[in-house]
Image (cartoon, rainbow, N blue to C red; front, top):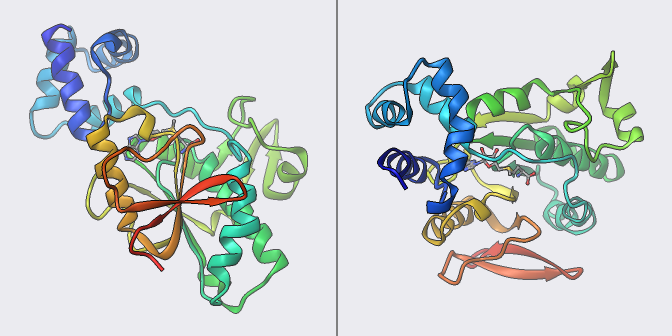
Length: 272
Ligand SMILES: C[S@@+](CC[C@H](N)C(=O)[O-])C[C@H]1O[C@@H](n2cnc3c(N)ncnc32)[C@H](O)[C@@H]1O
């Protein structure tokens, strides 16, 4: 890998825990060329120099946004949302309190809005006095992507993947094939920029955290750090849901697997 590739890779690893690996240098070329043009930088060496200096927040946000993979869909993998309404939410609602859910890497928002729709369906069937205080936190490290998520506006077939007609009709305002999340759904979700590797990412504590399809881009040491941070944000007995292909690394993370309906979710090892 050339010097510029190594410097930018090291910066990305330190900033968001992205492990590119030596053979993925082509990704840097492909994803960063438009930024070089936009910021009028001659090459990746010049970009590396900007990244290593203090300041330049907008450029740094743009690099993170360009290099992170934001692939997502509505109700992705289906079963996590079924498990949520059949088992996790009933267990967490049993004490009658408000519920706090966190989509900890929400990308363009589909995961967070899918959580909001699932929680609304659950509360419709089992209303509770405390439900006005329910909250869904949606966060991501990539600021431009998070801002798109927050608009709640989806138009392309790719953006709408996984959304069925009844849910489109129930939760969106449609205009010229553009779908905007209804204010009643919007009121349930709060968006904030957060890096899960940082100690105080995600204000407060949660009944359920979704952190899916992010570990796969991290090396093991970073996976352990991210999972320890998330374990520390679970309420006692709260659940962490990972991506379908993701497992705990061998080193201790403060989490233990729990099999529910043939699916694995995680609880803080010291949790209730
Ligand atoms: C592949 S998407 C997954 C989106 C969604 N969770 C899903 O499973 O469909 C990965 C997201 O993780 C975000 N991400 C990467 N590193 C992160 C970090 N350290 N903290 C928070 N978000 C991060 C990226 O910006 C990206 O939007």
